[in-house]
Image (cartoon, rainbow, N blue to C red):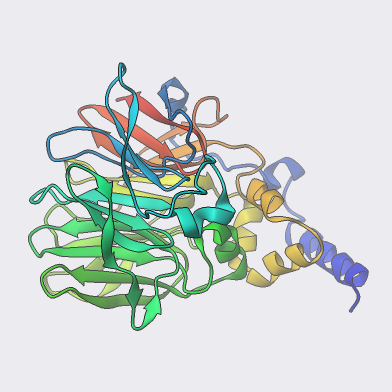
Length: 370
């Protein structure tokens, strides 16, 4: 079948599939019942000379936040007078790491994603998408290796983690064994289900694969009592729950289904969870992510990754944060529906009555007062 015939057949299938949709709703981010369009009131903290503060974490003394940016550095917020200072890097090979955003150099410069402090030691653990799990002491500097391979194969897309200090275990995700971070849209479009969820035992230095066959496993968060751990599965819009203790230990269920593509998950002091959505799922985006052949076909007939990414966000960048109870119920939805201030958010960290809001693509973070 030549490309013109193929394109015509694909367009015909689109027309049949979406015949009941009005054109403006096909690509539009859906309305979420009960949502509050309040996040545009967030205060912006620009990350000068950097892009993509993906994760935010505070140290055991309340200092920070710290964040990893696209050029491979870990930065620390030192307050309004000093602003952001360099805290750590994940590789010493940084002679070419001079541009704020250079995806083609991420494997050289590193791309820190999830961050977590060990509250007992004060050490910072870093999930570097290309370089695996790293650790740096409380004074910063060059991070050292913790885990770089599993089952004899290098980690391909290390994404997020949480630390169980009772067990001395780190739970973490590897989003794909095929695609790397800069190819994240291909994970969504191809139907890739090679993602894994693992644990690293700090005492034995052993890694155990707990879950396989996941569709873009992303954010990780332990429950307050340590009885279960959550894993965001971005492609399916699900938050999965793996029971660690009790009668259901070892079993997996669906904790929640969210109205979009979840990134990081973070627990607050009350045991509730904030889920950051990279974007809400339009009918078109949901269909594409559920039918991998369609995404591959769109790439084949000339759509580029940037166009397809825009279609996933409904051609309207926005911000959506979901608060879940410890039972998986949606308690609150906060949005910047028009993307006036925030967009493409990757994490929501609640601290002292404020939400600190990260973005994997923007050159700033947001601070919203609850």
